[in-house]
Image: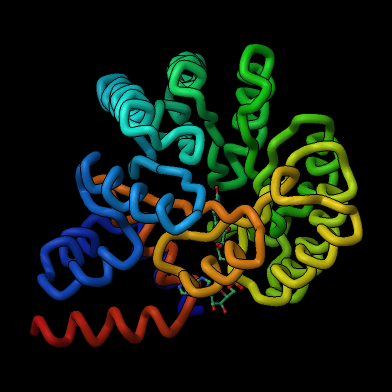
Length: 306
Ligand SMILES: Cc1cc2nc3c(=O)[nH]c(=O)nc-3n(C[C@H](O)[C@H](O)[C@H](O)COP(=O)(O)OP(=O)(O)OC[C@H]3O[C@@H](n4cnc5c(N)ncnc54)[C@H](O)[C@@H]3O)c2cc1C
């Protein structure tokens, strides 16, 4: 119920205006987002890489509505990749891209062209791209674009969401040699017709999908903060004899940093997903929706400003 309300607020521009101007929300934003500028992304990335983490950078923005906005997002990624290479932060850092930010909702061909340009720039910078997955209405289009991109850029990563009923089958399709697949639970509000609704069913699906990916020939990227799923990931890594160059854990910036350090200390590859940019609202609301404790923190901050 609470999650539904927060995810609805994520789509409300009035709520966005309120949150964006409340002075005490700044600290909350900073916990989950590197900052508004490219420099902020580079600064946070440098510190994480020094701590032995790999990074994926996400320029925040989604549901772009004009070709001009989509081009600006593409250009930001091209600039970012150049700066990362110049700073010696590749290949430790790759980029995560949302196709909706590149125009997918109004022009799929444009989104593909922009994504391809980013893949070319990533090749030049000596790193890779992963396509984030958004709500279920975009899954087919995103996977179609992924397969087209992989013709010339086979390292392009996919994201599959364990809450979708279709995902076990998608995992089988994408578990082939060289295929980089990030497995996450899924962050959007989805109908029962397409998605498991209970946390238990989502977790069980995650384990089935994890088994398919870890026993396959691809490169699994286990994106979760869930202690039980991480333990299962560690177990399957031993079972399938996967060393740190054959799979990785992924977690979000600001969430369970001690666990990220613990896994690095134990010799695993761990990639932190670092969002940056001024369009942080939708991202922040999804993070709040995931955990009631975050919401209490947020509510306290808002009360202080009143
Ligand atoms: C690297 C990465 C990339 C992702 N990419 C996508 C994507 O492309 N598409 C998509 O739909 N989703 C994506 N997600 C989000 C994902 O789908 C989940 O919504 C999110 O990771 C929470 O699920 P969980 O597996 O951590 O399990 P949960 O059961 O939600 O959490 C397990 C534990 O982790 C901690 N935790 C989890 N979330 C939070 C939080 N917000 N604040 C504080 N503690 C928390 C808590 O201790 C919690 O008990 C991504 C997640 C990661 C880590």
